[in-house]
Amino acid sequence: MTRAVVIGGGIVGLTAGLALRQAGAEVIVCEQADEIRAAGASLGVWSNALAVFATLGLHDRVQDIGKPSEMYFHDNHGKIIRPDGFPAGVGDYLLVHRAKLNKLVADAIGAENIRLGARFGRYEEHDGGVTAQFADGTEIEADLLIGADGAYSVVREQLVPGAAAREHVGHHAWRAVLPPEVATAPGDVMVVGRNDSRGGYARTYDGGVFWLLSQFNAPELTGTKKEQCLLRARDLNDGNWNPLLEELIEATPEEAILHNQIMVVPPLPRWTSRRVALAGDSAHAMSPHITAGASLGVEDAALLARYFADDPEHALARYEADRIPHYEHVATLSGAVEKSASPAEFAQNYAAFSHWMTSQQPVAGRELVSAR
Ligand SMILES: Cc1cc2nc3c(=O)[nH]c(=O)nc-3n(C[C@H](O)[C@H](O)[C@H](O)COP(=O)(O)OP(=O)(O)OC[C@H]3O[C@@H](n4cnc5c(N)ncnc54)[C@H](O)[C@@H]3O)c2cc1C
Image (cartoon, rainbow, N blue to C red; front, side, top):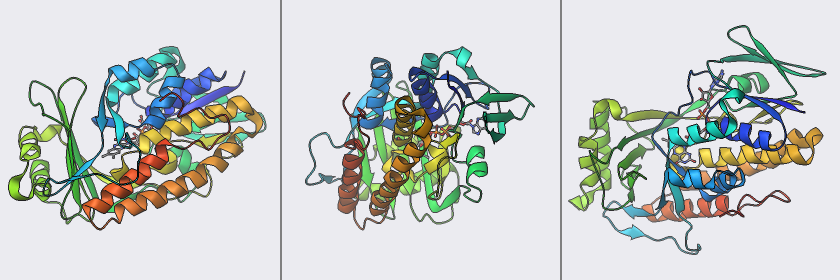
């Protein structure tokens, strides 16, 4: 039986672990933290990733922690923008609780197949396999090592030296979740506003609210996180057509606001060696203005397992040959969204990206979209 060691117990590592197990491998997922958790609040999961969860037998459990939502945009005056030329449902996604999603995939893998508090250091490839070495001096022997250790990947550092994650200069994001006893919203609203600011709010599965804000080309940040958010929320609310986002920000404790300087991984010349492969943010941490990094990473995990099940000997080479051009196209479409000159253009380019992502079937026999 093939032994696979997965580095990283985020959503991509966990999905890779489960998919590889179901493909017949003996898997151990190694996570540096002492528990399976997730940085961040809510996560928009698109149909390509939902189809993966369905094929892994998790359809109902994922739906249970999600709220069906639709991504469409208003401009800064409140006008709804409907992109042209796309089928109905192009903006449909499921808003899930990040930590609950990770936990339910971890439960499906089984605690006995997950090692917590295991900080990976480096690997050695040799004729018989690959040895993963950990900070505590322990080692794991495997046939395959998957680096799903996120944007600051240690696996990538060794596999592709010189490809450190970089700041997406001037791009910041702020977000928080408010429980139903603190806030509710009558509907979901996303706005593309002035000064390269975007944001809004969406209802969560338990009746609370997730709000978010982001800005390209942000000036130097000053003040508290709450002040930074209120400043940008005003870019979305010309004429005071909808004050709810500002009210939600006011109702959020400062310490509950998560702020990120956005980091991106540069395009990589390779994703694999003979026995090592990258998946998820370790390979392609990208600007979240297309809200798709996790959904795409879940797809990486499923494809890796699919190639492995079909043809273990050539699986990694086939995986790399699939993924590199795929992400070149992601970068092109995502770049078009980022460069949009108006809210209408942003909405159009965003729909073009999500339509493309959710309708891809690049691999023979790939059923990723069949479970929709
Ligand atoms: C503001 C924002 C909003 C976003 N919204 C969306 C969205 O709506 N939809 C969407 O699809 N995507 C979204 N994304 C992208 C998404 O968050 C990421 O693409 C996704 O979380 C990446 O998952 P991952 O498992 O690859 O990496 P991570 O979630 O970073 O997991 C990596 C794991 O590896 C572990 N690890 C790291 N180093 C080591 C080591 N040396 N040894 C052992 N373990 C290690 C870490 O502790 C962590 O648990 C958003 C991103 C941001 C910043």
